[in-house]
Length: 183
Image (tube, rainbow, N blue to C red; front, side, top):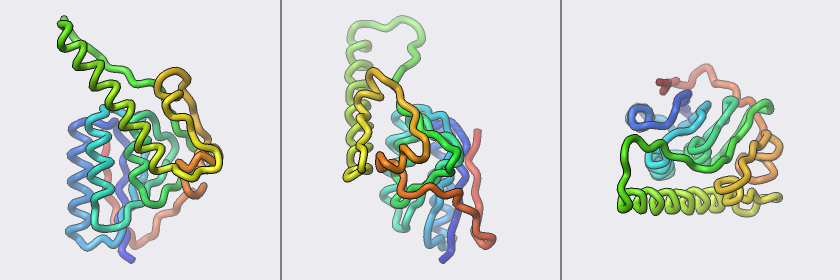
C-alpha cells in the first residue's frame, strides 16, 4: 500500500485550505492508496473547515487522520473527516464556543446575517460531530461545548466519546511520501 502523509500544522484559513486541497490532489494524482493527515492546529475559519471536511470525505481513497498533539476548534471538523482516527497519548482536543471578529461599523441587516450564519455553523458542526461519533460509549454533548462550557478531551476521553478509534503514536512508514501544509 502506498501511503501519502500530509502534515497539517497550521491555522485553518483560505491559504492553508488551498494548500491542503493541492497536496491531497497531488497525492492522488501520484497514485496514493491512502492519505494520512497528521494534524496540529488551533483551528480557524468555519467556512474553510467545513469545505475541507467535505473535500476530504469525497476523496476516492481512504483518509486517516491523526492528532499530533492538539486539535482545537474547527480543527475537530477536519479531523473527523478521517475514516480511521488516531491520537498520540499526550494529545488534546478542544471544543469551545464560536466567535467572530468584526471590524468597523455593522448595520442591523448585517448583524442579523452574522447571527444566522453563526447559528447555522453551530448546527452544522454539531451534526458532523454527532454523525462521526455515533455509537460512542460516552457521547460528547457538543452543543453544550459550543454554547456554554468549553471542554478539553484527553486521548482517552476522545476514545470513549468516539472522536478517535485508537490511541496510537502512528509511526511513519519509511516508504511513505510526505507533504507539509503550514503557515
